[in-house]
Image 1: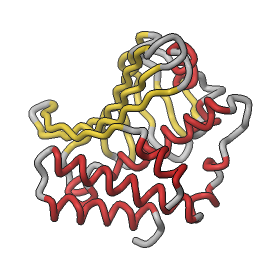
Image 2: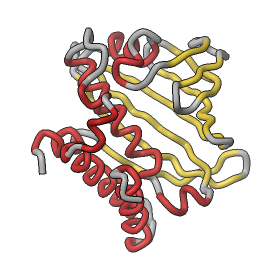
Image 3: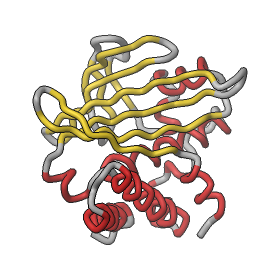
Image 4: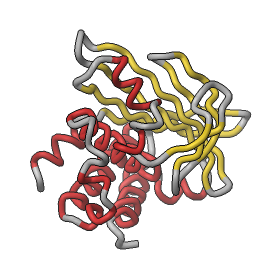
Length: 211
């Protein structure tokens, strides 16, 4: 197992929380990480349409409170909170479904900042099959890309942004470790161990192209 990949996956704190939204059960997938930059730069990396494609994907739309956005090949939605440089929230609309995204930033000293990402998802058949890794692994990849971008902000894309990277042994190690960690977070939240581990394995197979 690649030590660098293990360290990158291990740098993220993961949690699953139970909740309710509009009278329906939801689960909140929480991923938190500290970055070696100040809070203003981290906020800019997350909200600047010129920078987002360098670590995530091309984005279009009106990136302000109340504006609509669309990520190329992914979700779109409405920005529902924008309080620079600390709080951002949006709807996450994909495949006819709706979930919700919240991001909080806080300084960790002069040149470090902590990002906490919360993805609030309905407990639907997709969740019941894949568990928190269904969204958690994707966000882990995004947070990994953000690390690379902050290390080299002028690069058009980090190496991991190339679709061919997903077939490499390093990528498969990343997906395996990330899926397992989300399974452990699910168990810590009270899910039956066998159910959580099965969902984590299905998630791993999906991201590794084995499904």
